[in-house]
Length: 239
Image 1 (cartoon, helix red, strand yellow):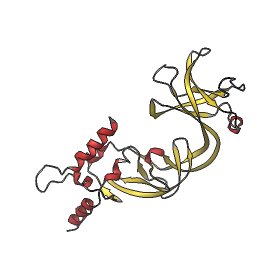
Image 2 (image 1 turned 180 degrees about the vertical axis):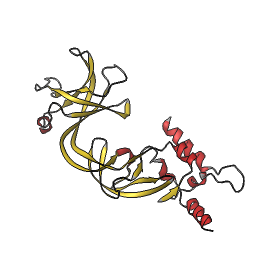
Image 3 (image 1 turned 180 degrees about the horizontal axis):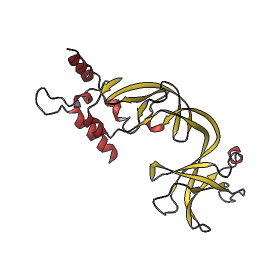
Image 4 (image 1 turned 90 degrees about the vertical axis):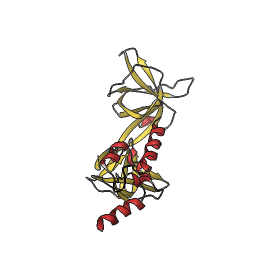
């Protein structure tokens, strides 16, 4: 339903406003397939796209490892915990009690739950041939279901303090990455280079400076902004 809503919204914005001659609410910015590198949006468009942004800052980045997990009830504490599963490999010797975790459930892929490792089973399960890693939840769960599956991201040793942004802000692939920098109602498509990935954050090695604001929610839709109408708008303003 969310995908359908987004495409309906973009389609509706691509239809010229029926307000008569001389009235332009900026909706025509979406009427061309040519991607724009810089453009302005009206307040209505920003609200309709539900854009949210974040400030670019330096963050502590950690090396991480991701394992499969499922939720179960710990009878000794009468609480829901995450049981992670790991094969016999070198990662087993890198994981320690007290390390932070992020639990991502298959049924709630856009929501992170934070936890901490409190137990490591040093005996291999004879049937699955796997070891178990147990994480308690620091952030509360909105339900008490067991058996739900997902992934456990474990933060290992600290790597560096670096400029980093949320994964949702990054667009592109195959080395051609970019973000949308926001200054009020003005937006700029900015090419960036990335480094390490740490949980939900990605290191930015080139293209952004600390303190700038970038779009998180709605960044994908901004790819459909066209150039021609924005350039025409600026030409009219110069006249």
